[in-house]
Image 1 (tube, helix red, strand yellow):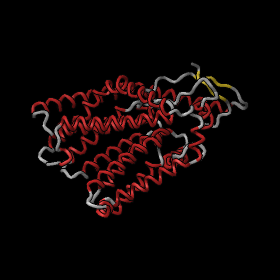
Image 2 (cartoon, one colour; image 1 turned 30 degrees about the vertical axis):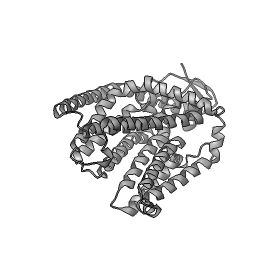
Image 3 (cartoon, one colour; image 1 turned 135 degrees about the vertical axis):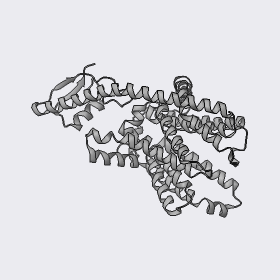
Image 4 (tube, helix red, strand yellow; image 1 turned 45 degrees about the vertical axis):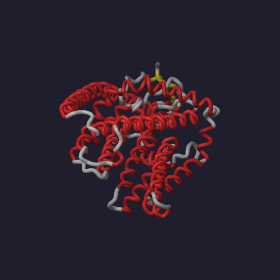
Length: 405
């Protein structure tokens, strides 16, 4: 109520803060739990498709999509290892995936509807920009279904689950929007200028095309290849949605991808009057992951590569994937171990010092080493910075702290 309207994300974040306080060991499980929930969501979502997909294919593709999203993150630490960021962004995406799982489930109508409602209450109450983008998907799907229905009664009967979830999602988003804290927080941003937002959007596209996408292409090749093989194994199925040529499908899908990207960047530019921090742009990584996997699947489904080329692509991607994983495990273990030891030593130092110091003073701390893929807990050299103040509040320190930079 006092800062923002993200009632769902804030509730769960504060719930875990209350339970775990500043015990880091408990929070370390969240990235693993998040990755597993995303993996399981994609696994069940693939299982809900009309085509028959083997368990091995579902496991391989689900793991590959999870890895792809991880490595396509603009800032891995901020998206996957910062608890505050997880609750509003990563968990919103996970809730969306599971909401789609429940919506596409045809066996348990009541239970799946309840599950979808819970998921989309969370989505609607977690991030304003993410909710708008997911809401656009919802609206386009409903409009498409309406166009294909004979009359309004047929549309209502065949889309009753989707309409229930859509209404609940909209109510959740409206509750989010009308929270007084949103307007107090909005007052801290510069004045919103609609036309200037297009300039910021153009900057976002430049960043995407020059500083982001080229460096992510190897990860796309490695982790989207399983969907190429999945598409090849599904060539015997007659899928109406995949009736057009690959060229036509690629152009239409690319146009849709860049259109939704434009809307997303424009929303962020208007709301924040800037290109946005990595945790918000994480949705771009999710959209790009979906886009890449769909294109690769369609290429396999249309038989763009013969069996020999497919085997070569598969073997190369597997070798590169294993090599990449081994490299990062070895590299990150060394970096994050040093960081973890230094951070533990800092916490032990300030908590021990807190037992002997009786009056307010200023303590200068040595800087922490690089944190690698983790989100650094480093503070600033300004006692008024929020990181410094929260470190002091979290451990009830009797003194102020700054870092010697």
